[in-house]
Length: 158
Image 1 (tube, rainbow, N blue to C red):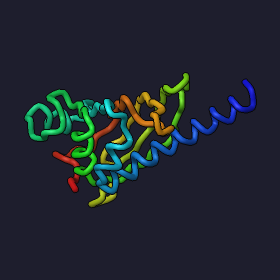
Image 2: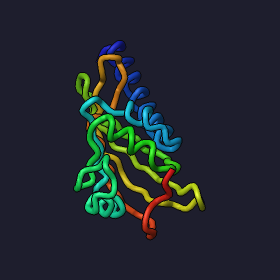
Image 3: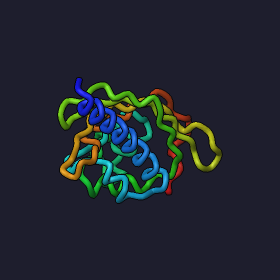
Image 4: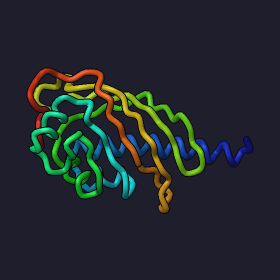
Protein backbone atom coordinates (compact mmCIF):
# COMPACT_ATOMS: atom_id res chain seq x y z
CA UNK A 1 0.00 0.00 0.00
CA UNK A 2 1.39 3.41 -0.95
CA UNK A 3 1.93 6.12 1.64
CA UNK A 4 -0.98 8.15 0.27
CA UNK A 5 -3.25 5.10 0.43
CA UNK A 6 -2.12 4.40 4.01
CA UNK A 7 -2.80 8.01 5.00
CA UNK A 8 -6.27 7.89 3.43
CA UNK A 9 -7.00 4.62 5.24
CA UNK A 10 -5.85 6.14 8.56
CA UNK A 11 -7.93 9.26 7.98
CA UNK A 12 -10.98 7.11 7.18
CA UNK A 13 -10.45 5.23 10.46
CA UNK A 14 -10.35 8.49 12.41
CA UNK A 15 -13.48 9.81 10.71
CA UNK A 16 -15.33 6.56 11.38
CA UNK A 17 -14.32 6.61 15.04
CA UNK A 18 -15.48 10.21 15.25
CA UNK A 19 -18.85 9.17 13.81
CA UNK A 20 -19.30 6.77 16.75
CA UNK A 21 -18.46 9.60 19.17
CA UNK A 22 -20.92 11.94 17.40
CA UNK A 23 -23.58 9.23 17.63
CA UNK A 24 -23.08 8.83 21.40
CA UNK A 25 -23.09 12.58 22.03
CA UNK A 26 -26.22 13.08 19.91
CA UNK A 27 -28.27 10.43 21.64
CA UNK A 28 -26.98 11.32 25.12
CA UNK A 29 -27.96 14.97 24.70
CA UNK A 30 -31.29 14.06 23.05
CA UNK A 31 -30.27 15.99 19.93
CA UNK A 32 -32.53 14.41 17.33
CA UNK A 33 -31.10 16.44 14.45
CA UNK A 34 -27.51 15.43 15.25
CA UNK A 35 -28.62 11.82 15.74
CA UNK A 36 -30.36 11.73 12.37
CA UNK A 37 -27.25 13.26 10.77
CA UNK A 38 -25.27 10.20 11.88
CA UNK A 39 -27.20 8.20 9.25
CA UNK A 40 -27.37 8.22 5.47
CA UNK A 41 -30.64 9.38 3.88
CA UNK A 42 -31.73 5.74 3.57
CA UNK A 43 -30.09 4.63 6.82
CA UNK A 44 -31.81 2.59 9.50
CA UNK A 45 -31.25 1.17 12.95
CA UNK A 46 -32.52 -2.13 14.32
CA UNK A 47 -33.05 -2.18 18.09
CA UNK A 48 -35.25 -5.28 18.09
CA UNK A 49 -32.80 -7.28 20.19
CA UNK A 50 -33.87 -5.21 23.21
CA UNK A 51 -36.91 -6.59 25.01
CA UNK A 52 -38.19 -3.10 25.90
CA UNK A 53 -38.01 -2.03 22.24
CA UNK A 54 -39.81 -5.20 21.09
CA UNK A 55 -42.59 -4.58 23.59
CA UNK A 56 -43.01 -0.93 22.58
CA UNK A 57 -42.94 -1.84 18.88
CA UNK A 58 -45.39 -4.73 19.20
CA UNK A 59 -47.81 -2.57 21.17
CA UNK A 60 -47.52 0.26 18.63
CA UNK A 61 -46.66 2.71 21.42
CA UNK A 62 -44.08 4.66 19.42
CA UNK A 63 -44.76 6.08 15.99
CA UNK A 64 -41.15 6.14 14.78
CA UNK A 65 -40.47 2.39 15.00
CA UNK A 66 -42.02 -0.42 12.96
CA UNK A 67 -43.60 -3.46 14.59
CA UNK A 68 -40.28 -5.33 14.57
CA UNK A 69 -38.19 -2.60 16.24
CA UNK A 70 -36.57 -1.06 13.16
CA UNK A 71 -36.34 2.72 12.79
CA UNK A 72 -36.16 3.93 9.17
CA UNK A 73 -36.01 7.39 7.65
CA UNK A 74 -34.53 10.67 8.78
CA UNK A 75 -37.72 11.95 10.46
CA UNK A 76 -38.14 8.75 12.48
CA UNK A 77 -34.46 8.76 13.43
CA UNK A 78 -34.81 12.40 14.49
CA UNK A 79 -37.72 11.50 16.78
CA UNK A 80 -35.89 8.49 18.23
CA UNK A 81 -32.71 10.48 18.84
CA UNK A 82 -34.58 13.09 20.82
CA UNK A 83 -36.43 10.65 23.07
CA UNK A 84 -34.05 8.66 25.23
CA UNK A 85 -31.75 10.32 27.76
CA UNK A 86 -28.96 7.89 28.62
CA UNK A 87 -25.16 7.90 28.80
CA UNK A 88 -23.31 5.83 26.18
CA UNK A 89 -19.76 4.59 26.35
CA UNK A 90 -18.61 3.12 23.03
CA UNK A 91 -15.33 1.27 22.74
CA UNK A 92 -13.34 -1.37 20.95
CA UNK A 93 -14.35 0.12 17.62
CA UNK A 94 -13.16 -2.36 15.03
CA UNK A 95 -13.11 -1.22 11.42
CA UNK A 96 -13.35 -4.63 9.80
CA UNK A 97 -12.95 -3.38 6.26
CA UNK A 98 -12.96 -0.31 4.10
CA UNK A 99 -13.64 -0.92 0.44
CA UNK A 100 -13.97 2.28 -1.53
CA UNK A 101 -16.72 4.31 0.09
CA UNK A 102 -18.11 1.48 2.25
CA UNK A 103 -16.95 0.25 5.64
CA UNK A 104 -17.98 -2.59 7.92
CA UNK A 105 -17.49 -1.97 11.63
CA UNK A 106 -18.19 -3.44 15.04
CA UNK A 107 -18.08 -1.80 18.45
CA UNK A 108 -19.09 -2.53 22.02
CA UNK A 109 -21.29 -0.23 24.06
CA UNK A 110 -22.28 0.22 27.68
CA UNK A 111 -25.21 2.47 28.52
CA UNK A 112 -25.68 4.02 31.95
CA UNK A 113 -28.96 5.36 33.34
CA UNK A 114 -28.95 9.06 34.24
CA UNK A 115 -31.18 8.60 37.29
CA UNK A 116 -29.00 6.21 39.29
CA UNK A 117 -25.88 5.63 37.16
CA UNK A 118 -26.43 1.89 36.92
CA UNK A 119 -25.80 -0.06 33.75
CA UNK A 120 -29.02 0.08 31.74
CA UNK A 121 -27.79 -2.25 29.00
CA UNK A 122 -24.75 -3.26 27.02
CA UNK A 123 -24.02 -5.02 23.80
CA UNK A 124 -22.42 -4.79 20.40
CA UNK A 125 -23.00 -2.74 17.27
CA UNK A 126 -22.67 -4.29 13.82
CA UNK A 127 -22.67 -1.53 11.24
CA UNK A 128 -22.15 -0.58 7.65
CA UNK A 129 -21.05 2.98 6.99
CA UNK A 130 -20.91 4.89 3.74
CA UNK A 131 -18.76 7.86 2.78
CA UNK A 132 -21.29 10.49 1.70
CA UNK A 133 -20.96 13.23 -0.92
CA UNK A 134 -19.77 15.69 1.76
CA UNK A 135 -16.90 13.31 2.67
CA UNK A 136 -18.46 12.31 6.01
CA UNK A 137 -18.90 8.68 7.00
CA UNK A 138 -22.48 7.89 8.07
CA UNK A 139 -24.30 4.80 9.25
CA UNK A 140 -26.33 3.07 6.57
CA UNK A 141 -27.21 0.04 8.67
CA UNK A 142 -26.89 0.01 12.45
CA UNK A 143 -27.64 -3.18 14.38
CA UNK A 144 -27.86 -2.99 18.17
CA UNK A 145 -27.19 -6.46 19.57
CA UNK A 146 -28.25 -6.61 23.20
CA UNK A 147 -26.08 -8.73 25.46
CA UNK A 148 -27.59 -7.46 28.74
CA UNK A 149 -30.68 -5.47 29.72
CA UNK A 150 -31.46 -4.15 33.15
CA UNK A 151 -34.62 -5.60 34.62
CA UNK A 152 -37.03 -2.66 34.67
CA UNK A 153 -39.96 -1.71 32.44
CA UNK A 154 -38.46 1.14 30.40
CA UNK A 155 -35.26 3.13 30.29
CA UNK A 156 -35.51 6.77 31.43
CA UNK A 157 -37.05 9.01 28.78
CA UNK A 158 -35.95 12.56 28.03
